[in-house]
Length: 465
Figure 1: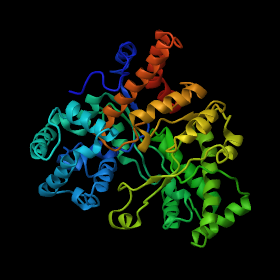
Figure 2: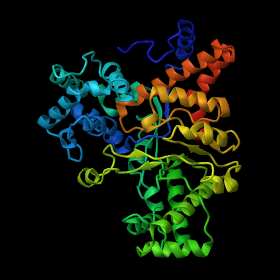
Figure 3: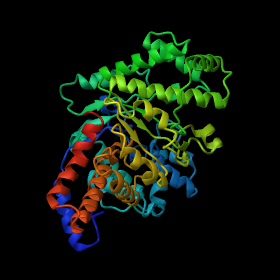
């Protein structure tokens, strides 16, 4: 098993306080209002086939560092269909042989917790243990208590949000909802990014499919808005609580009706310029905020990523293969048009995430410290690591307090890592609050109440759970 005091403060007195605080939230249910585990995986409830297909190939956190260490992505099974046993063993051996490259990373923490606490093995991965580990894990994965639904129950996951295309019929979600033996709330999330990038290849075809799903013509901008509203209502009826947006920036700037229709028409025939596409997208994102004030979907914004940074890798292996790289963040002026219109609207909730730590205390915390609609999202992706989370919690709390944050967001498709990620956040927050008690800035009962609120209260309020 992993150590009971992992991630708790080094000072013995503060650690004792943190240990007592952590015990009060250790076994609380997991609320995961933003993630990427597919609903179909839970509906099918098929056994996981092998360790590599589960823990290596689909996880770009893992494959990117192995690739940086000289392991070809094809060796790891990236961009391929199901792996046969020989290829799966090859990928697994690559991980074990390069286990040292994960030292000190959050990936190592999650993998350690998964291997020890979930899969029940204390063997350290290495070239000499790779095959023994592979066989032991494969044996466990064949057992009924390691199927996806059994793991949800074991992990205590009360709410699990997926990420879904607006044209999805959500049949898997409906089937899970109607299954009386299935108790986890699996919520779809409205992810309209591809329909908000008019200069991107394939945009016009995507918008046509959007209209077909909504039963509405999308040959005009007004038709596009109506189709979006229709599909959002469909998602709401299937349990959705949020819409998720990830663009290079969070720029929002209104166009007048004539300009919006003109650029929209140009985009439909593929004659819009890159600059015009950005202008239309910023207007469309503003429209998404307007729709959120009407239907109550919490808006999560994850900007600032250069997708598919290495073109040859993207062409060969496709997207989400480990080379999306952060960009500088900018929120204050980019979001001003949105917040001037809707920032004080009682039905709007906006959660802001960043990959640029420099803007957390300079922009995000001050915005959340004034606008009642704005919350600061927990560190994600490259920053969802212990040191980054500690820095984030301290800098945000000093300016905006604890209540203006979102609750922990695991943002993962790796089902087996969900409990490790949430437990990490609970331990780190226990340590932070214990330090405030030790400094006589909080009473211990206040710290305990605050920690329970971070785990259970914040996500319920921010995502209307």
